Amino acid sequence: MPTTPAERTRDPDAFDIAVIGAGPAGLAAAVAAVAGGASVALIDGSPRSGGQYWRHRPADDGALHHDWSAFSRLRDGVAAGTSAGRLVHLAGHAVWHVERTAEGYAVHAVADERDVEIHTGRVIIATGAYDRQLPFPGWTLPGVFTAGGAQALFKGQGVVAGRRVVIAGTGPLLLPLAAGLAGAGAKVAGVFEAGRPTGILRRPMTVARAGKVRESLGYASAFARHRIAYRTGLTVVAAHGTDAVQAVTVARLDTDWNVVPGTEERITCDALAVGYGFTPQVELAADLGCELVLDPDGSMVVRVDERQRSSVDGAWVAGEACGVGGSALALVEGELAGLQAAAAVTGLALDAPTFAMLERRRARLRAFASLLAATFPVRPGWQTWLADDTIVCRCEEVPAAALRDAVTDLGATDARTAKLFSRAGMGLCQGRVCGSAMAALVATASGRAVTAGDLAATTRRPIAVPITLGALATGPVAQSLETPPIPVAPPEEVSA
Image (tube, rainbow, N blue to C red):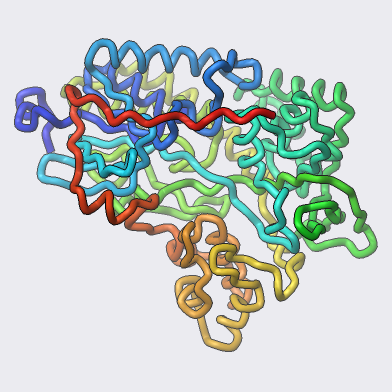
């Protein structure tokens, strides 16, 4: 792989670095890499940068977002790099495959029904994460959203999920979602936190060092202003309705998340948003051969070193793909990855004081992320909420009983075999929605804990996003610094 400016002249059309993902980690990486002297392709499937965290409409002024000043600074950095001819922002380009080449990497993205090929010496993978979902009776009804889906609808289109909304699950995302929907006029009928987040209160210094005190006080103020009830140790265990959700059953849980008999209560609503944390998006890293490890929160993540390098030469990873930790941590990891990748391009070592400063900040934020993971775990008792006919795999309509039968009747000993017997995880989403739940159900039926092998059954996807045969048949369109990107129209705005 090329390491010096002289060697890089062998492929004049290649970028020094391709950054995949334009959320907090990807934006920070791209801006840092350009500042470090590299040419950069910033590639993202969304028509606008910001990722899920800073998902926005064109006229947004940042009032609905945290750390909007950081986004504005990074967006200005991307614009400056573009004006200087050092960066190309490929918005609306969804990466479906990355492969090794003699010179480095070829990144394949689909845009406007064309396969766009970007050659690069190095890659920074900043693909983020998506909602981790737990099935329960009625979760397939219209009007049942993931917490991230309800937030995306609100941030990206200005549309609230419903007039009377119940929010349930576990984790800190429930707080900004409730505050945002209530501020937009929805009646939040309650926030039901399945865990008991008292661990946060026992570690005030960790919270303070992460700079989260003011944010927490802001949520407390919003909840008081909108009279939102926040109840812990309870969650939604069933949704009810015919053509759409009309009510939910909330129940108290024991410490393992089994329902405490006699505590069920029914709450009317026209929308339900549920969130149980996030699943890191590691498909591209997995297909490159990056080493994956089982994170303490039960998800597969990419193993990186102190410089954000993966086990594959020339590939760095930043943000949620190497462990869910929030936007502030993603920003630091992205900046580190960008500076380190640029240093590899130029042959100049990263300034030691800068590295030490970023390393200290990363350590503080990782400590806070570990505290959150320990405070908001997903307990195994959720599996007891399921009836035999509760759908687990929505794409293939596979119920819980079929997965359990794959183990008890057909002899499956792991999630991959259960997948082959039941077709769970074989649909359009390729296990993104049901993968972690399927792995947990199979492991429990087998009398053991979930393993990395179970999760690998739905983690490795050679085609990361859908692409048509027509797009492949026409052949790839080469993208370089001098080539204008394929224009991709932003989605139409929807009125509330």
